[in-house]
Length: 138
Image (cartoon, rainbow, N blue to C red; front, side, top):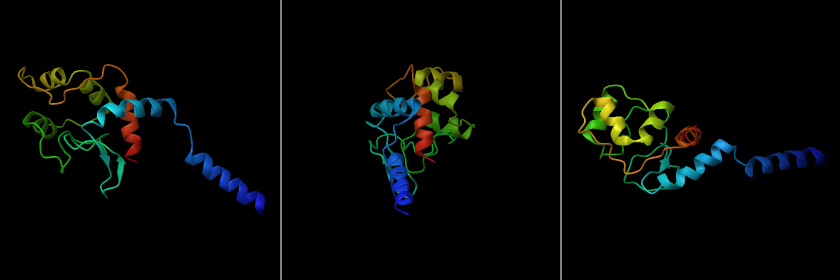
């Protein structure tokens, strides 16, 4: 009986202190730049990643319609329209958007005056960030 308890305890400790997979570690590292403006909080209010509130909550971003965080009131008209027109945050869209937000919105809308309202870009690693945010939201 004591061996079983010890095995269960060690297994629980190992899970608690598990070393993140490389993709998760890369996403966690990139998150540090995002948290200046964004946070990740579950619908029940549990904060999974602390961060700013000047941009949308990224909980559930994977598969979410653009402009659909009901608690964020400052989406641009262009982002809201993109969501109404069917833009969903897939890995491909997320990576493309982060590469160059203005270019993404201009190509999406065909309006070359459209601007993404995010003042950051990410030329590499956005796929790892997407995976990290998707996994946090499970």
